[in-house]
Each structure stands twice: as C-alpha cells, then as structure tokens.
Image (cartoon, rainbow, N blue to C red; front, side, top):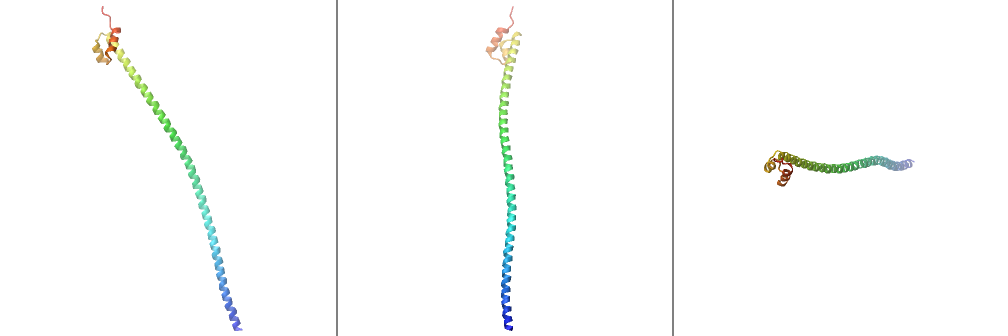
Length: 144
C-alpha cells in the first residue's frame, strides 16, 4: 500500500508540474496579449497625433500658399507702381525742360527788347543762333 501511495504521489507531482507549466504558459500568453493590447493603444495614440500633425501641416501649407499669392500680387502691384512713377518722373523732366526752354525764350525776348546783341543773348540764355535771330527780328526795339 505504501507503494501505491508513492506511485500516486509521483504521478501527482508530474501532473502538478505539467499543470504549473500549462498555467505558466497560459499566463505568458495572457501577458503577451495584454502587452499587445497596450502596444496597440499606444500605436493608436501615435496615429491620432500624426493625423493632427498632418492636419496642422495642411493648414500651414494653405496659409503659406495664401501668403505667397499675396506676396506675388504685391510684387506685381509694386512693379506697376514703379512703372507709373518712372513715367511721371519722365513727364516732369519733360515739363521742366519745356519750362526751362520757355524761360530762356522769355529771357531772350526781354534781353532783345533791352537792345542786347545776339552774342550777349546767346551767352545768357544758351539758345541757338537761329532762335536768337528770330527773336531779334520780332522783338527788337524799332530805331527812329
């Protein structure tokens, strides 16, 4: 009977050992499953953050695109404004030349009325000889 008890006890230890191994394997599988679940949750959070970052990048790209368009329009407007300013400066220069020429002619007429010679008028006004001759014909005081 002692042998029977010993055999039963020996089988009980082997079965118990196998039971411990099975329980350990089951716990390892459960542990790996819960670890996998945690990893999946973390990956989901990372994916959500990436989606938010992508949305922010799209928003920034849209904003920069608008800024770039505005800068291009501003550049075009500035170029147009520069062309207008150059045109106005050219017109002012022409008007100044015309005014200077008119002032010289008026000055030459006044000098001719005072009886100055053609050389004296040329020195003071810078007008051409033909212009001075014409002025002298029409604006020289009549000698009596």
